[in-house]
Image (cartoon, rainbow over all chains, first blue to last red; front, top):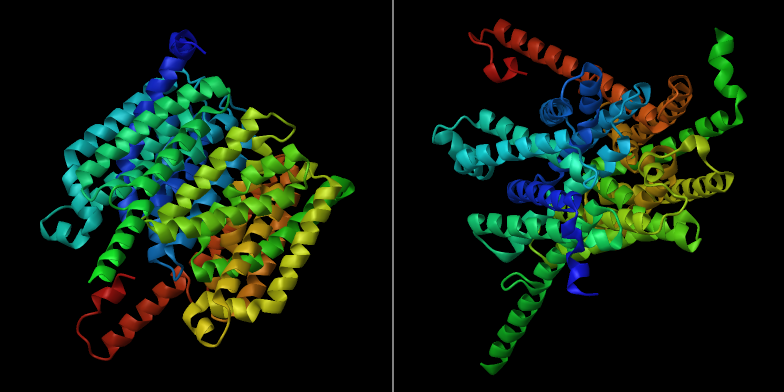
Length: 289
Length: 300
């Protein structure tokens, strides 16, 4: 095990490209995950990432870019869930479950009826190592667009998500912001799907935000920590998967989960150990009195 | 024509698939009533993904897959409980973290030790190729689940509606919580082979959500949900023969269609009924001499 051996992955173009893609997608997902985790929308990512399937198949049939179809189906899922929840006596979580599984099932049935060169396996589990040029370009555009738009309306969206009334009072168009945020989420998911697949996209949209939440109380810092954790675990996970010869997306998510566990245990303020120590010290002080 | 419609019944594997789907659909539908009331839709989602590593391990070691799956489902539920009580992360995020991590672990294991299970079968199910031993496992799980629900449904109902009240009258809510979780995990395991990990969620949510819009009585809700689960599952399996495609997809599409029809046309809680009622109320108000229709009602 010498240095040369450790550097081996970097000598392959596909490995370097995979790491860069994973870092880009992981970073973008991480930024969104901060909003999702704080707002309590963690599973919106889950729903949308499943619901894009019929859109992908339809886009293939029509000959449109897959990302466009996926994006529209994602929006349909988000707005459909909202509309049905507002007009029925069901709880939001149940409606979301019905809508996204319905769309996913529709996608599956459609998928078996058309012969495509889109591999279901790629959509379900991603194929970071075999990602094609055109997909890569789409992902870069989608991620770039999301980051730029988010940078522009960052404060407005933050205000809307945490205090919609206040946002309305200061004159923001909250309906527009709501759909803008969902659109950005769909866009990111589309970019991430081809790289890591549906279920691991869900992880990338939750875990980094939680890491940030465990380590800080400030939103800006939380975002920085989340992106840092996501980017480093994207690179590390891809790197490790080369040696393990195992699924890349899974390695990335497990690396993220490891960082989360460490943060939950050793976080300076909210970590389990430091809380226990603080409780012990408080008890000792109390005894001393 | 009739000949053509009857063809699926000439094949043993089709008959088996139809019957097994019906049983599973019914059991899942029964549980979906509790899931809908308790607001646990995401728990079904989580458990159905979290059982994947258990399936992988069971196959590698040579244990019955149901055992591994069940154990890993319960482990996931346990981990969720611990993480939720020990950190400041919200419950929905905890669920998301735990199930995706479990799923990732399963994916990694399967990619590291290639065996004759394919990830695609786990995620999408394959009822047409189901082995007889698996059918027996599924039927046994379903029977146990039915028995437990049959014996304990009143306690479970009270627990789902009002855990405090359940505790106050002396029920052991921790045990009921665990029981409901175990039932969910067991049915998710049973349904896994029929429709796959993703569509299990639909079977565990949609029938209950549909029935909830039709009635206010829990007994009737269970009955309606069960009926819907059994019929859509059998019909879905039957239709999939002609579409030559995804059985799970057909079943869940049917369930979603029924849900949407009910959502629009349910006699009391449907969109159409609500509109009509709103109109009638506005008319009544107008006749009664109110100059302006109430805007909030008009907007319904």
